[in-house]
Length: 221
Ligand SMILES: C[S@@+](CC[C@H](N)C(=O)[O-])C[C@H]1O[C@@H](n2cnc3c(N)ncnc32)[C@H](O)[C@@H]1O
Image (cartoon, rainbow, N blue to C red; front, side):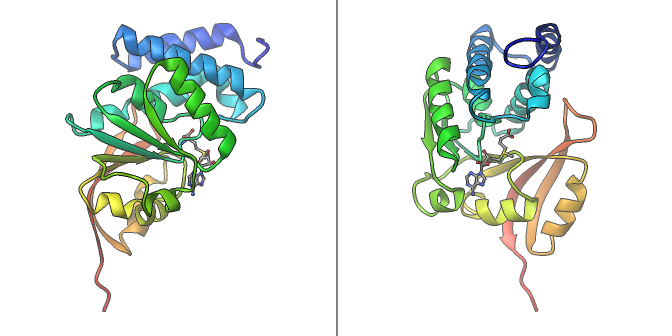
């Protein structure tokens, strides 16, 4: 067991498993290693990920986040991640798309926002961290986006309400969801016309990513 509370051998095996799930450049691996090192440094003082997932951080969090890039438009210039927490998926996206896409991370917890800034510096990626509630950021500080993502932040209905200003102006929404994904979509369809597709997760057979491309209010009555 390491000082950080996980078995290093299990962590190494998990990194190898993640390498089989993600096809990324050597430069991206260097950035991702810097992200995981920063996460390990901070995890003791700020709970960034569930401690039980630390040994599997590479598959449970990094590879799980990395798969979103394949679902995004190839020419995405601006990506907004809501409720970024320990950097998932936002900092993983920034590692993969460095120099090509402006990544905005919205995180209301000030300690986690400080982590996101420090981790980005350690990774050598330029991101914009908005240390405010998403509701506030979406009311003004964010630019028009090509992609909006959110992982483990809220139900799909709440996410659509939150991200509507971006989704209605052309952003594609990428929302990783667990085994209740279909139920969440059915519930959201009570309020919205949604053009959505499901994409099986590469890292969790029970999970999927809901990709939203087009959103409008349902007319009632
Ligand atoms: C369960 S965590 C998920 C973090 C990360 N996306 C992940 O998948 O590991 C939710 C995060 O969203 C942040 N958060 C909650 N409500 C928020 C809001 N209204 N605006 C911005 N961030 C919020 C929390 O501080 C927390 O870091």
